[in-house]
Image (cartoon, rainbow, N blue to C red):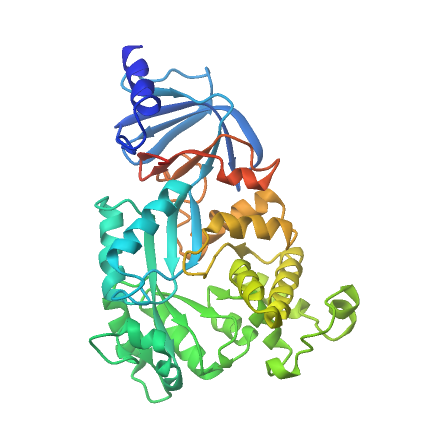
Length: 425
């Protein structure tokens, strides 16, 4: 009993600005309701035993004895979810500028304390990302776990100033993590060099033919890398990427290139109503069926397009297109993940809320998009993404039920990352 009292006093009554991180070797959470992809209605009155960095047992309160070595946290009426994941961030586009270490560490800490325990970085300076990923993994910094990509595109893309900033000290298009590829590229060597950067996957970006998509994807899989891509890479359509075995495609508005050859041919000003989507030739059902067959996940990134539309009203068509396509894909049974792609101006909770309010996902399916589905595209769903015995204790504790109101996803009490407890400052 004494240990129980001390644990509660330590966690809840010391000033938060002094104690923002707690390590308890053995912790028992009691009275919680579990919400995850396996519990689409809250599983109430549960005890969750955490030892070290893992969940070791889950049972209904009072049905089993809690070992004396466990600190007990009574959390009656609270809701326990898997830690959230953002499937599309950019933390190191310009490490010498806006993405300097001081600012990036500040943002990463804020993300973690908001409930985000994992992010997928979709192209930046891998030299910086490798260091951040290592520091997050071992706990030297307060940060979500960081998985990152090596980018491949046609040579023309590498005139983009973002790639020049990410390759500073080297040549854009010639870096192992930012590679220009053509039909003559030594693909086994290029992929091997990407592996050497510590990247978890290859990102396909622009100016690639379907033949190159096939070649890159096959070699990447051979060498143990996942492949992700923009939904459209100019010379290859979304279905070409899906058929090649690309694990996820990003940016819902780009999916319309499955039917249209250019933006100019797309009727931007047309009112996007049921008549348009059902009767004007936007039949994406074959693509969605193909995505289901290949288990391809749609990384919709709605929030970045909504922000673009607010800044430039001519871009409203892109948001409305993305919103409708996401909704149609979801209704067709395509897996959706939750990514922001807005340079951390907003966190993934806002994308979750948009998936519900604007794309028609149920709250539990939007939560699954930001947990299990993102874990699946990173191929770490055997470790995280649901609240299960044997999985790593990356968890989020909420004060209010997010299934009743998705905005309750922001009612954070504490976050567990790799078994460590973080309080929201």
